[in-house]
Image (tube, rainbow, N blue to C red; front, side, top):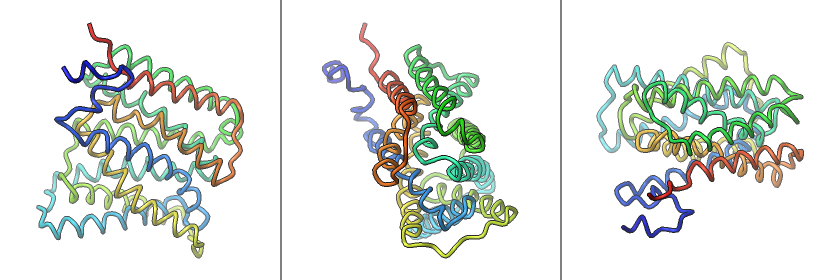
Length: 302
């Protein structure tokens, strides 16, 4: 009865008392990941893309391993290590590594906007595996995808095709990894499980960095701060929250951050990074944002 008395603009699942961590986890993905896109670009001044991401997740995994061992967590089994390696390779090695590569060509707000392609891929894969999306969810996803199509046909993405190629690769890797992790992959739970995924992803990223002959520069003060923020907030905060959402929310909910972080990334990029955003790009991001309003709006009561 309490849910029925809520204002219509408040999604019922936000006040689900049986799972009070959904809203904090989702807000962590919205706010922290929205800011990490700019941090990645700042860190690129000294840390090459794969080296940056590899060292970032290596440091985060070391912190989580130390925490898990202090709490005497059970060490992952061989099968759990294999599942962690698959998830880490796809989501961190491919998803995050290619994202950093893309930001060498396009500014951070556009990279964030391109991640709105992920809900389409995730939901299509989930539907193929048996998940049933409502018409409202599909319409919300479709609106977001239309905004991305508009964005990719105009402005900076059209002028920098390599940025678009890298972002498409990043989106595909992240989406496939998310679906596999939600349905088929079962790494160890808790901090030890997250640490194993990050360690496997870091190894893949550092191997790629070696083969690309990446050479880091002497880090500037701002690059060090950005890298540290990515370790503490991006990896230990938002990524852990996303892993929680994958196991406890529907694909429509745990992918909804893709329609919010472009707006946050845009504001940060313009205010702090002095990025130039064209009118058509603003329109496309507005369309993306309208997708989440529809996606998370409550279903009408019958």
